[in-house]
Length: 352
Image (cartoon, rainbow, N blue to C red; front, side, top):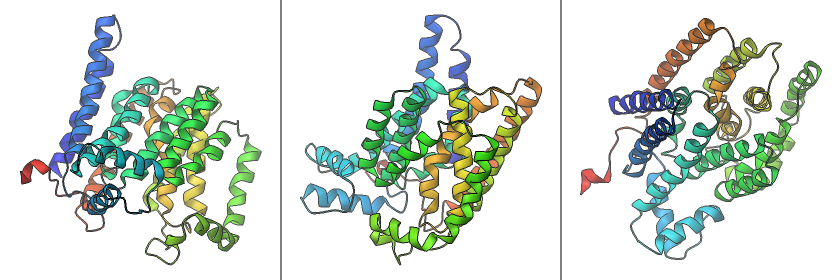
């Protein structure tokens, strides 16, 4: 646990320093970029060299062997193509974890560098809310989350063709990524009070119609029906997170003019809240909800920037850092469980 806390604090400090030295000359900008690259290189390194960390590790080793030998697998075409390409150069399955670690880290690095108004806080939220260390486990799913984040970046810039392209690429690694096409587009519209009221009122109809909707979902995920994943799973942690973010967004943005990005993040936060309130009957509900919640968490500093009162904004940041550390501790307490197995941390260097 101490190692993971050290990574959290050290990488956050480097990212914060990177932004602090970035204002000024071209030389300072180069130094800033170097430190930000260093911060995310550390995250990449610890992910790339892990060994037998996370419950899915062994299954991905087996999938690598099956793909390398030409057997059929259940994984998506994008994942299979990358693994097949890796197998052309090596039969060492460690490389799939290194390659997918790099592919996962690159989009989050690019989005934070380009769009976040506080690199340190964005990096801190990415790690402390569990998204970085949970990416050790569901490597296809978390790559899809990061691709979705990059697709959203293109959509905010009104590059609709690139948004659709990256959405398709994300779906090629995990088919759940297809949900971002309608939802991210819906989040671009300005929602008035009446629309928001009708939106949340429809949630009760969603619950009433869940039997029909479950049958539709199982057309895409037939293996989930009746499995260990097919259970009621109310995610209180994510529900509380959505409520906290919605409260701060309301405080920061009430009666303020919102740019396209701020409006999108606010809407995605409301969609996340809706999802965790009314769609708890969906198998693995948190995995779907993360497509809406992760962008809000990563770019939350841009919401805070709307808040003009510097003293109150600082108090909110202190609360966010404190809450993040507390939540990270809770997550790390669960990291030893046999359903996660994120701790203890080993690298293949320990077994050479």
